[in-house]
Each structure stands twice: as C-alpha cells, then as structure tokens.
Length: 192
Image 1 (cartoon, rainbow, N blue to C red):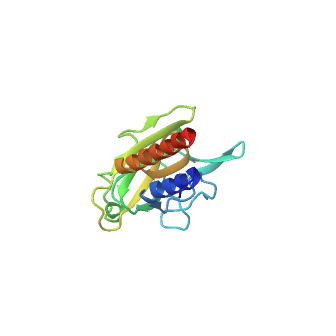
Image 2: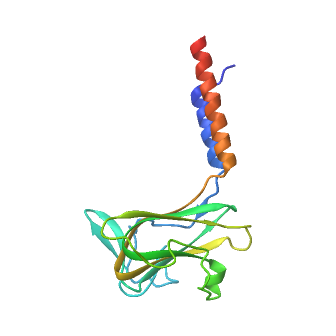
Image 3: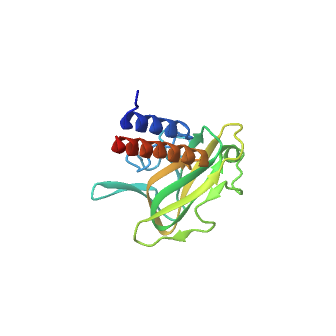
C-alpha cells in the first residue's frame, strides 16, 4: 500500500509540532483587552507600574504606550528546557527584561535572565521588530518567568509580544527527513 503525499505531510507536521516546547500564560499580545491602571497583582494578563501606561489605537490597531518610568509585566511558564525567543514590535525609547519568577518573588531585580538591550534603546518613530533569546537551563521549580516592558524618555510603544520555542536541531533533522521522503515519493510517481 502506498502512502499519499498528503497523509505523509500531515504526519510530518504533527510529529514536527509535537516535539516542540510550549509557552503557557502569555495572553493579550496586542493589548486588545489591556486596561490602564491594572496594577501588579490585579486581574488581567498585563499588570502595570506607573501612571501613564495606556492602550492606544492607530487606524483600528491597538498597541501599548509606556511613558517614562512606566512598566508592564506578565508572567508565563515553559514546559520544556531549551532556548526561547522573546519578540515584539517597538517604537520610541524602551527595553524589555525577563526575570525568573522566583527572583521576582524574592524582590531580586539585579539579575535578569535576558534583556532586549542592557540600556534603553531609542528605536525612533518607525516600528521595528525586536528579538532576543534566553535559555532555561535545566527545568526545576516553577519554570515561570516575568516579562517586563519599560518606557523611557518620550515614551515607548509596543505591540505583538510573543515568546516561542526555538526548534531543536533534532526537529530540523526530522523535518528534512520527511521532506526527503516526500521528494522520493514524488520522483517515484513520475517514473511510473
């Protein structure tokens, strides 16, 4: 019995996706439901420190604006050890820092797990994509992190925040093997 290309491609996609780590708890990445003044510890995915953090609209697209000294934070957890990427769109002056939740609970803010830049960056008026990575090391405890976004200077605009796993080399090898099998099947069918 010969396996169809479609069923092989579906099996490949499922096996490639199942090997990936997941991120739990990072909600409202485009600030569609953000309410100004949601203090840290209150309801809602994003909590704020400071008074000028607000969601703004630009042609129907919501984004977050952080004034000088304002911060928003959201916690999330990961289910597997590995490397993850933090990504967001930014304009204005600001930065992002990532802390282990245990450090936040102990009020230790001197050793972030990762930062978008050690010092605030002025990205200018044009939106730019910002990315940085962090490695979890061995998984233990809560596997939980706090993602902070901070405004400086004239303010910082942020949109489309995400945290995603960086695929392991084994996943790429599995994908290439599956694509090779698809190529062989296509070649065999043409020869028939």
